[in-house]
Structures are given as structure tokens and as C-alpha cells.
Length: 329
Image (cartoon, rainbow, N blue to C red; front, side, top):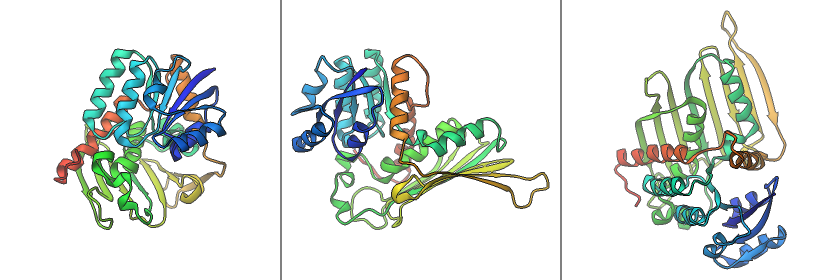
């Protein structure tokens, strides 16, 4: 059984700790030691005062890094230098420069490093990809996707609003999930037009990001919008083919029950056939993703996001910031 250390005991770290099939959580570190201690007690693990001490432990095989953005790369590099496999949360760094440093460390360590793009493992997307790759909607034409939430009182004072800690705003929070899903489903993309804009929150990072992407051969397009002024949480991802459409709606909880809607064009067109698949169970993506991480360590190829995937996503975000004449460094 794989022995795991966890750096970061916040909301995402707690989800990671609760979804470790085939592994044992041994140690937890967090800048807020009381939070690390509380999570460790729940999981029958040990709380560690400093993450630097955690990565040096000989009783760990792998480290999960689920910190705020500015600590993702330093923690992951240190874990690799201590001979640990690493599962790092998206976006894996604040900017492309962070990712280049991490990629170099991963190549030198020869350990497995994968990125937590857990949306790939939602059942709606797993089924959608199977239908798409089996030709169920014909050749891919374009993607249209929206992902948003409404923030909360004091949102502009949280770490995500501090560019030195976050590296950027909504594009680095929810936007990278949309970009990654486009790449996972439709291959490589290039930025044709992007805009990072702050409409509502009094903060120095964007609260909305808009992207228009095209495939390198200009045969496919993607329209993406990530927002923290959505007010009512929303997830809507549409995949348009020449003979049908796939639509993933909701992610569970406040985003609504996850559904996959499969629209299949009739030979004479008109209203399409519609099949709806609902996934009302608790979010299983975290456990599915960790199982994939175990398979990657064992040498198997899975749907897990790689550092190269994260690099591509951050490159597109960085290009959008350049087009918007904003700099988050």
C-alpha cells in the first residue's frame, strides 16, 4: 500500500485525504498547524509542523501538494528532490516559469508527477469522451463552455485576489479546468483572442476571463468563459460534432446534479434524439483520479493530467494576460 504525505489541509486537501483508495495517509502539513492536526486526527495520521520536514520523511512514497498557488511549485520540487512521487493540484504553478522549473525537476528526478485536473474523472466527462471517441457525434466542430461562481463577502481580500500568491484570477482558478478539458477532448489549441477583465470585485486580478481558441489547423474552435460574478454557480460544457452534441451540466452540490445530455441528429434533421444520463451520487472524481495516479506509478497510461498539460494551459492563460495588457508577477 502506498504511503502518502499531504501538504495543505484546506478544502481540497481534505477532499484528497478522504479519497485515497489503495493508499494510506501517513502525515499532514499545513501552515495552520491546528488545521493539519485536526485533519490528521480524523485520518489517523501524524501532523507535521513544517512541510519541509514532511517531504524528507523516509516512510513516504508520494506527496500530494494542495496548497495555495505560490507554494505549489516549491513544495513539489522539494518532494521530487527527496525522491517522492507527486500529485500536485492545478494549476501546478502561478505562471509558465513556475512550470518550467517544475518540469526540469521532474525530468531530473525520474519520479511520477501528475496534475490534479479532477474534472476529467467526473462520470459525465468519462462517458462523453467515450461517445466522442467512438464517433457518436461525428467529427468535432467546436466547444462552448461556461464555468462560474459568485464569490462571497470578503472575496477580494482572500489569497486568490493577491497576484503575488495566486498568479492571476478566475482564469487560474476555474478557467484552467475548461482549457484542460478542451485539450483532453480535442487535442492542442492556440489562442486567437483572449480577455481578462475585472467587472465587479475590487481586486487586482480578473474576475472574468474570455477565450476564443482554435486548433492549429483552424478546423475546430472553442469559446470559453470563466467567471466569479456568475452569482448562481454554473457549469455548462457543450461539445458540438457534425452529427450531434454532448452537454455536461452541473458538477454536483451547489452546481446542480451532474448530467450528460446526448443529442443525436436524425437523418432528416429536425429535433434530435435526446438521451440524458444523470449522476446523482457523491463526487467520485477525486477517488478515480487517485486510482489513476497509482496506475501511473505502476507504469500504466491513464487520463491523468501531466505537467505538459498544465504548461499548455498556463501558456494560454499567460497569453490572455498579455493580450489584456495585465501582468501578474
